[in-house]
Image (tube, rainbow, N blue to C red):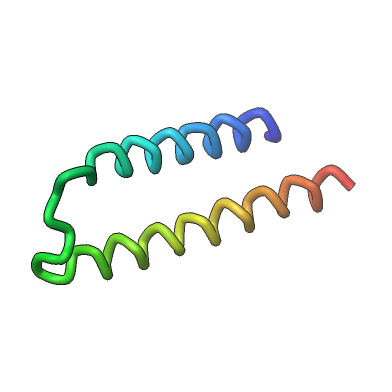
Length: 60
């Protein structure tokens, strides 16, 4: 299961990096998009931390 979690976290990290690259040059303040983007990024970060912590809890 740890291997699956590692893959999921790697894929999530890659997706967030791809989103960051795609955001360059986009007028992100339009229609409140920046606020939505920042909120989603914070939620993804919280999920990543929770999943990483759960890996250590399952191992012990």
